[in-house]
Structures are given as C-alpha cells and as structure tokens.
Image 1 (cartoon, rainbow, N blue to C red):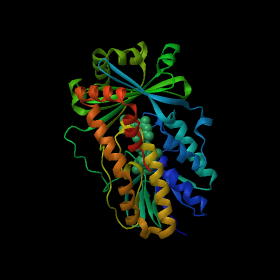
Image 2: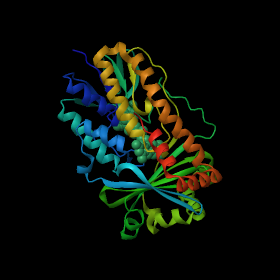
Image 3: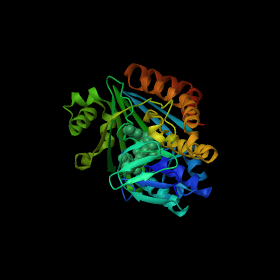
Image 4: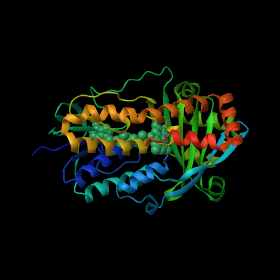
Length: 358
Ligand SMILES: Cc1cc2nc3c(=O)[nH]c(=O)nc-3n(C[C@H](O)[C@H](O)[C@H](O)COP(=O)(O)OP(=O)(O)OC[C@H]3O[C@@H](n4cnc5c(N)ncnc54)[C@H](O)[C@@H]3O)c2cc1C
C-alpha cells in the first residue's frame, strides 16, 4: 500500500514524519545519508524551536545543549548586550538531527537511504529505485532536486562558512551564555558555545566579500580578523587547522507561494529566512508539522492549501529578518541599530519577537 513519502530527514522532514506516525500513518522517510550529518548552521536554537521540539518529544536540554540567555552585538567599536525574551540553546546539528531521526524511528517511521534525483506527481525518483507516493513531502533543505530549483535572484548572493574552535577557558568566559553577532560590511559571524566543548563560528557573507579574498576561505577569515579585532580574538590561534565548511548562493528571503498538486514543500524548500534571525530550524519544524496536519485532513489534495497558508504564516518573520539583515550588513546602519538597541531594548526585543514564526 502506498503512503506519503518524505524526501529529506532534516528537521522539516523528521517533524512531518513524527506527526504523521503519531496518527498511525506510515510515511517513508528517505535521506541520502545513512547517519544524520552535521549541516552548516549557526547552531542557535530559539525558544520557539525548543517549544516545537518539546511538542515532538525532544528535550533539547537533555542533549547537553549550551544555554543561551543573551545576544551580544558588535559593529566596529560598538557593542550592545540584550537579554533574550526567553532562554535559547546552542547545539550542534549533528546532535539535534540524530535525535530527530531517532524520535522518528521510535514513532515507527521507516527510513530508506537513497539520493532522490527528481520528483514528479505521485513519485520520487531515486538513484536506487522509484518510490510511489500518496503525497510527496519535499524537505531537501539547502539542496534542490532536479526540476524544483528555487530561484536565485540576488545580484550578490549570500554564502555560508562554518568552523569550530575548541572553547578554552578564555573563550568560555568571553562568550558564556551569549550568542554573539559580529556585524561586518557585507555579512556577519554568529558565535555560540555548543556541545562537545566547541565554539561554533558561522558566517553568512555576500559573495563579493568572498571574491575580495580571492574565493579562499582562509584568506577571507584572515581579512575579516585583520579588520575586526574582537572577531580575531574569538578565532583564537589554531583556527587555520580547523575544517571550514561552506555553502553557496543561499536564497535568503525566498518563499514558495504555490506548489503542484500532491507536492508539499517544507523547511528551506518552503521559506528561507535570513540566518541572522536564528529561526530557520523553527520554520522547518513548523512547516513539517503543518504540512503533516494538512495531509492528514486532505491527503495529497491538501498541498496547495497548505503551501498558501504556510507562505502567509512565514511572510512576517521572513520580512522582518530581511529588514534586519539589510540593517546589519551596512556598517553605519548597523552602528545606528546597535545604539538604538542599547538605548531602547524593548524595540530590539520586539524585533526578535517579530522574526519568530507563530
Ligand atoms: C549560514 C547559515 C546559518 C544558519 N544558522 C541557523 C541557526 O543558527 N539557527 C537556525 O534555526 N537556523 C539556521 N540556519 C537555517 C537552517 O540551517 C535551515 O533553515 C534548516 O536546516 C532547514 O531545515 P530543513 O529540514 O529544511 O533542511 P536541511 O537541514 O538542509 O535537511 C535536508 C535533509 O535532506 C537531505 N537531502 C538533501 N538532498 C537530498 C536528496 N536529493 N535525496 C535525499 N535526501 C536529501 C539531507 O541529507 C538532509 O538530511 C542557518 C542557515 C545558514 C545558511
């Protein structure tokens, strides 16, 4: 008997699978990797993410996540420190995604390992075989499958870089229970402590900045640390020995307003919130949960209704996150924003609230 097929076992795909399985539907969850990977991510998990995870049966604190209670902003010589509206956490994606997969399996979800090359109404075409589906959930995140490519419209698109440095006593003291956002001309670096004794350093930067550094991540990081002493201080001495992950052309701000019959688009395939807001995983979980509920109510025929409803829900947080990004990437605006945040913290907290998904 055919059931729904979910392509991608990241946060969005696992959330959909868990909600379906709870209602005694047996989805097939397909991922190209046998084990949860460690996708490039800032690893900041907002209070909304935590609440949705709890609803799915995952206690993030039990995964040895590092508590995060404040955000610290840096731009040139300016610094502002603000308490988060509710506590958040720093946790590696490997640990979070592994827990989500485990939870899906415990709920009775079958997981198949295959790389899906394309999808068509009622089927996913994998490297190993063809999967007939009573409704398809596309949750491949940052990676598009053939024929379903998201538009890349930005003239100077964003790219992501991530490295981890061992959190020695100095760094632990410096960062503590904070998420640091270092705002540069053309991007930012987010720094947070995570499980395993590391500080996760994740940057989202305009491609033009990368080109200034001859498209060499080492040269880029050296350039940024030369320009920004406080960022350099956090990289510590051994950063050149660390592995650097990268991802290109992130379509920040894109929202899928429509879809095809029988195809539910989830997570980054539904809406890409600028990462500065730290709400991408929350959006992924919310879309997975909502899509599953639409499928339970309407089957494959519910896809268009779901997509329109989710787009409407994502518009406010994505819109405010785009505005925040436009402020943050421009030095004089970032400095003015930091001064305003320091002088009037409630306005900053309101912005944090407006960039969360309901
Ligand atoms: C620089 C940067 C920093 C970020 N920092 C944060 C942050 O701090 N906090 C936050 O909340 N969000 C952050 N985000 C956003 C967050 O990473 C994403 O929104 C989130 O991962 C989306 O989840 P997803 O389930 O849609 O996709 P993903 O997490 O990308 O998962 C997709 C899954 O699909 C699988 N897959 C892909 N292609 C195929 C295929 N063809 N066949 C089979 N399987 C496939 C992959 O193996 C993977 O398991 C950041 C994003 C960027 C770019």
